[in-house]
Length: 146
Image (cartoon, rainbow, N blue to C red; front, side, top):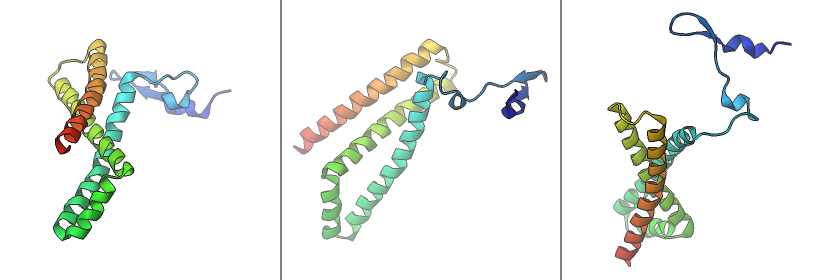
């Protein structure tokens, strides 16, 4: 028995010949294993959303700074609370990871690093550097604010 979705899987290649399109990996969960490239791509999108959410916290901080001492103290109480520190750490991690991902894309825009070993090497480097740089920034900030 043919699946009704089969009609949707037919397309044309660049020469105009009919070809069978691949199914989405989410439609074949038993056969699909996440790949580094897809996980990094999704993580880059998630980090972009996290950065947008972090801007709301920064806007709240700036607004409280302009309004007065009591409002600023309220924001400060939140940002030094465990929840606030976790959010700030996550925002820092998202910022560093998204920046490194952007640098990878800039490298690709120049035509370099498209081969799979380079993609994997720079991908793992982005993950490792993100964690290392974020930890270094936080340790430095804690030491400096002392």
